[in-house]
Length: 277
Length: 344
Image (cartoon, rainbow over all chains, first blue to last red; front, top):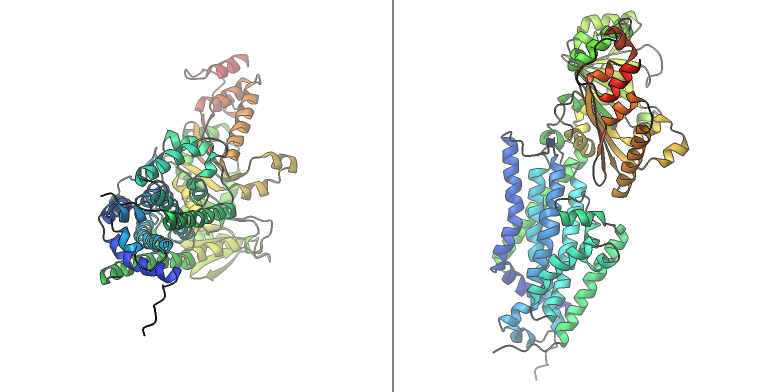
């Protein structure tokens, strides 16, 4: 008599889902969008390097020369921290479960003998692998192209390490937050976009405690570069800016990530997904 | 996971590893900065040690040829400092030097506790034989250090004795023996100020039109100034400073300070604004004219004070006034100065 097979544990199940999802996620149409987002700063960095080599005054701002490390810091703020990380978090995080629901394939996943929460965790790990393996090389290429212009690679090395770390943390935290939105809301993408381009921007621009309910507040405290004041909103934000300490920022970022991942997993476990016919 | 996915991840990880590896080698070796080359500032910065707290530059030729210098020279013909320097070193500042780069390393570095280590690197035309002979006549000793000729004083204090080094054809270094040796080491190991991002960012921010400038960490000069504790505790925490000036007929330039945070920047702006307002309350037209030439600006952590002293203001200096006969009043003179002139 054959012995009944036991269901795999939570973590092996999550890793199995990760293995299945990572390729699917990486070679999807969404990757073209991600390539465009992370490719733009790389392209700009290469063009800047070429123009600088040809002697064009590309690094002159108001008649003053700007060093490569400063430009690198500005690119980290503009391209990665304010745009790439939250946007990738929204697009991938909200789709972890929503895509399966939309494609009506969630039934196949949920009929497997794996905990439902492990499905979400596996997909979240796949999201992290996809984004980290695309965003980090992009940052490194920008660093290698931009920093040596009137700066030194060695001098900015520690900043690079901090940048890479904070971007990974940012992707992890935003991914967890939007995984909850994806698991609970009907139009998760819209809600996610309102969160990053509406709520976070407004909350950061007001004095008081509101900013503590954003991810950007804690994430921006880790940035080693000076915050640029490029527009009215960022000027107001910098005016009311108050940085939490490093341990406080790290504590809250990890708390948000773990808390939201748990909420997302519980939501997936409990929610009845009704597929539209 | 498909093979295609694995390849993608391997290539991606490879790029990150190459980038981090390059950064790590550059961070520990200090070799990459010279290849990646800072093209800001004069090439002589390669002789300035990486831990220098203050770096300064002066285009001696332009300053010496300036109208302002000529007028001061005419006004004070008995000034002998330049001549004394020539008698001691054999270098005629007016004729032999094109420009100088000066630096002060962190006090306490190299075992010189509480003593700044000064270094001046001068580019110009120098007669090596004549300079060496003169040094020997004054009891100097000539020795070699890593292929460079060093002329140093005969007194025993190695760290404090002044030394002269022939760094390259047309380039001499003057300073304490320790400072000269660390300058030679900095150039040979490529671990110079060009590898110091903080200082290089300050240097690259210097406008091209200035013929004299100085940048550095504020704590280094504040420690040397021996300010009373009461005063020192009231100064907002300034991190770095930059002074740049253009000397021609008059004197114009900018004094820029970077504070530790935005709040300190705001405090410093308020302190300077208060001082300017206080100065304007005085009835001294000369002071008012000078204060009116100051322009306070900046945002965030940056505080900038631009100044422009027209040549006419210098006409009011006692020596120059005598020289021009206390006569005509230039048309462009500010009204405060006209009042002052008329009152005398």
